[in-house]
Length: 111
Length: 114
Image 1 (cartoon, rainbow over the protein chains, first blue to last red):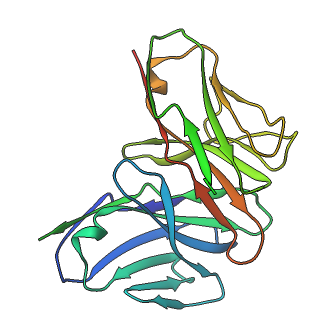
Image 2: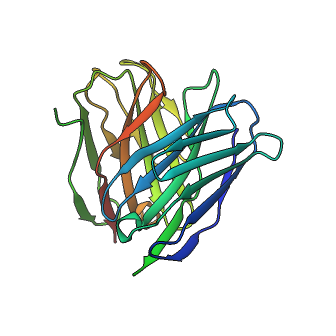
């Protein structure tokens, strides 16, 4: 099965860019996702990238995919205090019915 | 449209007691999932159901059972709760229509087993 790893914690100052990294093991992952979990809430889909793409930009969010290194990153430009949350990367392999989640990265934004 | 609802929001339970966590979705999604979230371990899949009438085991199924009598409901039962089952439990359903193939999550149930 898929293993997905992330660093546990990231602290940035308000207005700076945040980069959250993720590595995965299963090269057959079809979709790679970023979810956001705010305190006391469930996970919400932020953005996704299909495995045949290298980059996707969506307003302040940029997703980069390096298939050779099996590395996924999420860049948040002009990070705001409202971006403080836990961010999970996840992968769905073609033909499987289950999504594998990373351990989550807690982003702390310092005003 | 409510999406996915879970009940209870939180519960404190004595070890050895039986407990059922409820999950209901109104999006007519075929696939549903139960995860537990523990610090440093992320989300781990307990059980899943690809469609009504079928269920499957995830990464950490021991001590848990599920049923899927209809499309909307996917209850998770702890037959005899143990302290290691203290966790936050999330139910999710998956839309396989369109792009991307996305999971939608409930708000979670915080369970403490003493």
